[in-house]
Image (tube, rainbow, N blue to C red; front, side):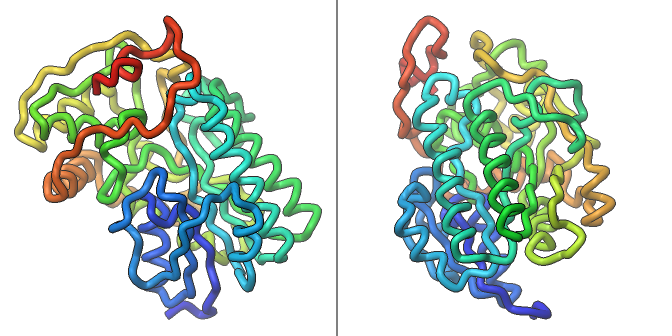
Length: 338
């Protein structure tokens, strides 16, 4: 049991990160309220131990009502579609920036103790990797811009009203409960879902883009202390490994090895605004949170594969409309080829 029980609001509680986080907090004895608009989550993700409400974060009056008595807010809800944001900037910006402002405003009005905001590695843009928290944000697409703008509003409101804030920067989280029928994001889950349907993985560009991936449990180990650890106030902290920096080609190879399904990737043209090399330094997380990578990439992909295989492959759900349809728009999205 925790030393002090908190009433905690977790947004995105039916989603991948939010469902795991709210379940972990409830297991630790906290009183957890979860909300989600169900755009990016699954109903069976929702932990049974929490109070759940189907609410859109943009519905300010409902958010304001649900905020009553809350001590700490974890804002995990996001339409985390970085590539798609170039072609659906209105929807992505609304669901990230405006939704965040709604949550932060309601939390400020309620005078909560602390707000933990899950931002994105996209904030760093295409600067030289590994990214450190001291780097000035340089977003290169509408999704990243919306996250950085939300960070600024959070700091502005909290500092004026005496509320503690922490900004977590998880990157490329993998594991069970991730939405794997989304054609616009989650490269590992997309590859596995296609392979289980006898389809080759799709890679944009030459596949030499490099990324680091974090298993969900390793991410939670950092997020849980953000509830009340005193020295984390006003900190921006990268969460994830910095020892495994792999190409997308290598990711496809591991997915093939783990699944036992040998299908050569299909290569498509580069997506506009895609950052080629993205990884974060974990030094600050190691110092403040005793971060360590407990689940390596192969093991994390294996656990993700086992989850998707057990749940069953699904057709991809093109649940967000393209707002900009031109010669730059990926054909895989225009023609629904994924």
